[in-house]
Length: 228
Image 1 (cartoon, rainbow, N blue to C red):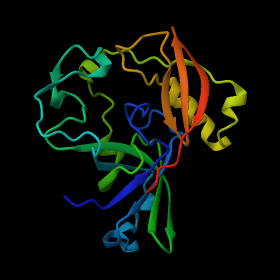
Image 2 (cartoon, rainbow, N blue to C red; image 1 turned 120 degrees about the horizontal axis):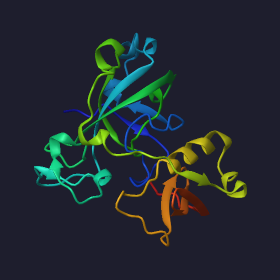
Image 3 (cartoon, rainbow, N blue to C red; image 1 turned 90 degrees about the horizontal axis):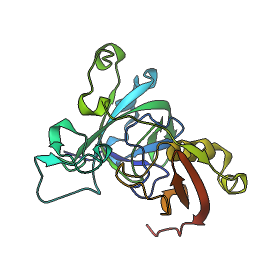
Image 4 (cartoon, rainbow, N blue to C red; image 1 turned 180 degrees about the horizontal axis):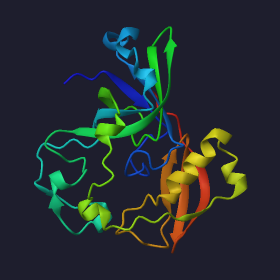
């Protein structure tokens, strides 16, 4: 398997990334490609599709051995399910799959084609293996059953994000971070109302508490830029 490119997002670490693609449509990302795959001809016709599949590498979840069962966080982290019945990153092969909206394709004189996508659930710098167009008549199954995932109640939190803190973000990123927090970044089994959590997003560590269904942002701490 060859890595064809990398996605660039506002998440420098894993905590806080939405559990599935498309849950927070405001999350934006760009995909750049390795020199071998920058031929514009390889992207001819892709702009006609509204969504694409990304096949990518779980680059931060590598293990020497795989396990037949895992503990999905959405089940409280205590009940085991078969690895093939989950989307756990700890798999025999470290391959992820995401469906994202393709906003546009631009062409840069230095990096070649750049894909601009929305709704991505990937960490900054995640390697991309492949890109395929999403085809609604074949890929969408409204009658599909969802196993245990369909029995887990997903409930968005109310978010209290003080205006003076929210304004530290550029306007185009404000709805995205609020959407991320509303998804409740905490593991389902972690309900400590006294704990201060932190989500690293777009240059800040967003520190918050959760009481019942209310998430309250306490402070924003500027992240130090890491040398590449």
